Length: 79
Image 1 (cartoon, rainbow, N blue to C red):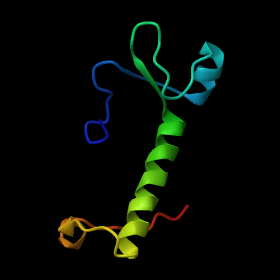
Image 2: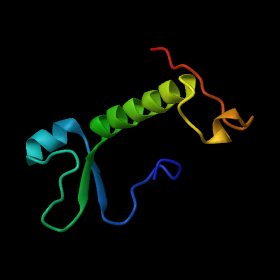
Image 3: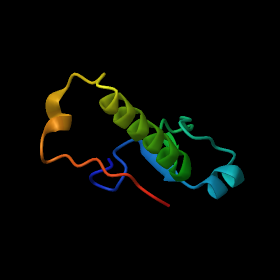
Image 4: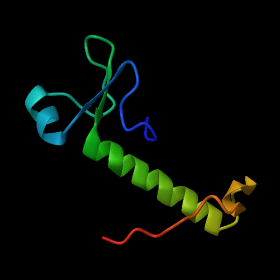
């Protein structure tokens, strides 16, 4: 989904503002069986997961060697 920049079948995106108006929540399944993803919350979740992986890599707790391969660059994002 991230690499295609569009949701897959059964997944619906919304914003925090729309979620409040529609009374829906992040990771909630609606009455039609669609998984609701609130964009801002999805981004926050993705950022937390990325930081966790970077920390595990820095602590040498990741055993997967892909982190050492040249095609993966880990860059620090500064706001």
